[in-house]
Image (cartoon, rainbow, N blue to C red):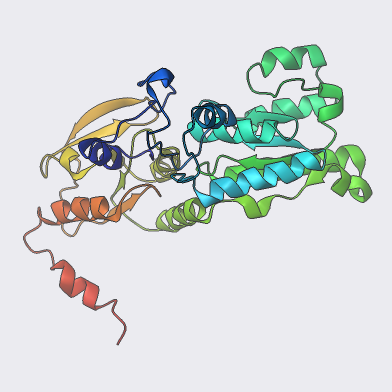
Length: 328
């Protein structure tokens, strides 16, 4: 449903079955899905191809559709861009479920292409400026553009949208970059004809989490602990931010904290699980940043906090600390 192991395990425990895993591997064959089945569309939505397949089977895909409204907002803006003859540039991870869904919806309305990062954006810009040939484009961006994409025609007008869990600052930087490319090529008087402003499509939940993390980076802390699913895109970006300043431990539950000395965590840059001894500094008081991804339940963060507090006999009770934040 979302990229959080605890939530998905809870659903499995309640008898919910998953049709696919997060990589798109089929777990239940489509011929085993029938009109009487309740099929829940996940938070990141699904492709039009899958939606139509389910509709053909008589499955009500609208009644149990949990697509995030901010994802739908991106789809709506993509539709508007397509109808206005802008090419939709999607900032996202090409294999991520949300990006696949967004690409499917945007490609039904207009020319679309996925860029993973600023490097991808800079390479795409070389086709706008004519620094690279159209023949190179179809090889370099294979599998990332919509059917019938015309390099010479479809890169004259662009608008940028994103996979909502990407770093909002990176999406904005990519949009600003394309704006400058179009400004340089067509001039300020023609800019609106070649670049669409899409800043209002950024997801506030993801953006708020990221903004809060930037504020945390100003803290003089000893370590950071980030809680969330290891395949969660927005959580991984928060980990990347924290790692710029602090020793950072990425965990998916309180069970990964074995003791005051031992923690089992995910090494995101190297994509592997690790075990670290003496992760807590030998000092008192110790200053710990605790944060999480947007898809992580608050109760999970609370359990991590309480477990760490349990290692310190002189820690104040949570209730007494909370009283200082209560309004009179």
